[in-house]
Length: 173
Ligand SMILES: CC(C)(COP(=O)(O)OP(=O)(O)OC[C@H]1O[C@@H](n2cnc3c(N)ncnc32)[C@H](O)[C@@H]1OP(=O)(O)O)[C@@H](O)C(=O)NCCC(=O)NCCS
Image 1 (tube, rainbow, N blue to C red):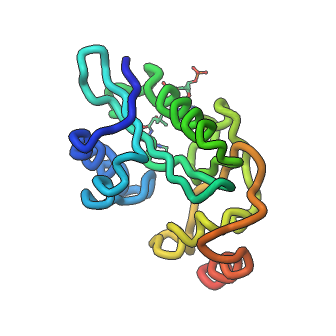
Image 2 (cartoon, rainbow, N blue to C red):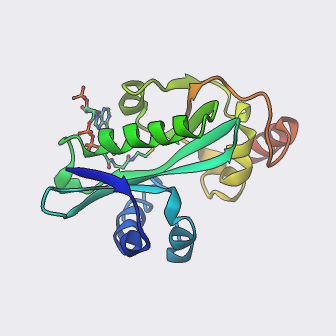
């Protein structure tokens, strides 16, 4: 298996696998244009024969925070180490940027516990994530994901202040 940064030529595979997992809310829908624009965020796994197995992305908010997004492996390729290898590569990428904290929202915390993530009780401790995705999410008022972090919870935010993120979540609830 090979794990490497994605190239623009991988955008179609990424688009197809990510959007095949959006119907039930497992992943956030991402238009093809957005995947192309953010292709440098993505890391992919390929089989020894070069077949695309899966992907994941690292979104940088700033030195205080980044986020693991769109991590997914083809159904036929699960449980063979690809998801873990992609996640490890994203963590190493975050470390190479010296980002203080990696966050994510998920329904499968057990997978992420293995890689040093822990639960964050209050989602509004991550206002940047709330402002980036939650305010436009159709599931805002019935979110069934837990928030997790690896590293310390950031003390600063850049997309909006924490009190406004709290208001947003309270209004939606
Ligand atoms: C989650 C996902 C990416 C894992 O990929 P994978 O290639 O099957 O994972 P790996 O084979 O690398 O497994 C690594 C470890 O995580 C564990 N693991 C895998 N999937 C898991 C899950 N859903 N829940 C808990 N643990 C899980 C494995 O048992 C393995 O543990 P081990 O090292 O102790 O044996 C894959 O199941 C997937 O695509 N799921 C659907 C999309 C999704 O839910 N993405 C997460 C969105 S936040």
